[in-house]
Image 1 (spheres, rainbow, N blue to C red):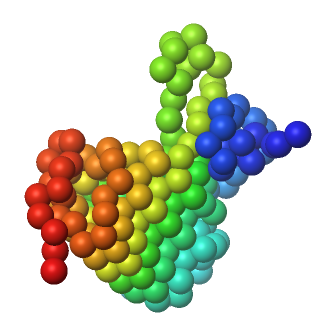
Image 2 (cartoon, rainbow, N blue to C red; image 1 turned 180 degrees about the vertical axis):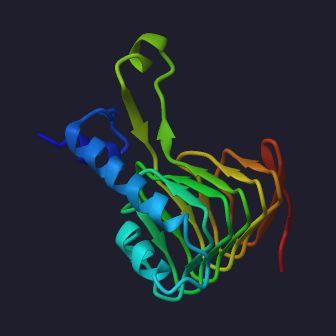
Length: 184
C-alpha cells in the first residue's frame, strides 16, 4: 500500500495531515525561516538552500525570500535563477531546466483540491507535477498551475496565468495565458 507521501507525489488523493508529510512540512518551514533571514551573498545561504532543496544544481541561485512546501520535490538545473518572493508549492515534482530565469513573485502550484466541498473538509488533495524547460524566462508575478509543462526556450509574460501546456519556443501572455507567437 502506498504511503501518503507516495500518493501525493504521484497525483493521487493524499491525506496532507499525515504525520510524515506534516513533519516534512515543518522541517521545510524551519529551513525557509532561516534562509529568508539571509541575503544572496550570505556565506551560509547555499548550505541552507541545499538542505532545503537537495535537488538544485550548485550553480543555481535563489534570492530570498523564497517559499515552498517541502523542498525535496524541487529540481533546479544548471544556472537556473529564481528571483525574490517566489512560491513553489511542491506536493509533486517541480522541475525547472537549465538557464531558466524565474522573475520575482512567480507562483508555481502543484496541489489540486477536490471540487466537492465535502471532500475538501477531509484534508485531502492531489498534486500534479510542473515542468519548465531549459532557457525559459518566466516574467514576474506569473502563476503556473498544477500539471503544466512549459517547453524549452519559452517566455511567459509578467502576470500571466498558465493553465495549459506550452510548446517549445512560445511567447505566452494573459489570464488565461495564450500563445501570442512562436519564438525563433
